[in-house]
Length: 231
Image 1: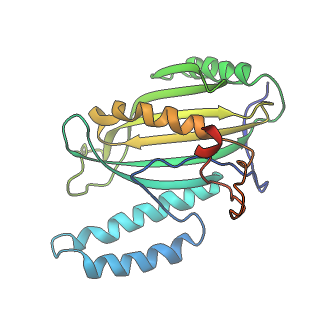
Image 2: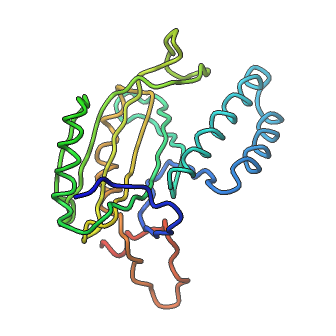
């Protein structure tokens, strides 16, 4: 089975149930939207926070522009209270789509991806499980990634990197021709495992077909809830 490729200019709709506590960010008109946000946040932020507003907005702009180039269809910032220690946990959630380059058994596609990760000496945990009758590959790891020095965030090393907990769910279409990649990431490494159940629920909600419409309801749009369809 061929290597998954990006969808390029092909528009592929996907439906899913965004978890609570995540705030969507724009993937269209990024620079205009964040320029307005920069101005507003600078006006509203406390004096001691004003110097970092531009840094945060600039980092977000770079992230969103890169994600848009990689066929991301959804990006959001998470803000949650830990169920373990009560602390604030910030995170990102990204959904992107890929064409696999052919059709076939989706379980074989995911098994091949696990094999290739092993060949790359990827250091993490991979679990190929069945969610609502469909195979889903969950990848969990802690990586050293570039990180800005921001108030309240975990400490950044001298080389500008910090450990980041990542949890990814790869959800194939029934015919294996499409793949939805859902990635959760947080610099609060110790709290990362708390979001495993959330990612299972999110992976289970992914669909490449629109949910049934309720009588009198507006037509569904991609990146929307299918919780009703799942029961």
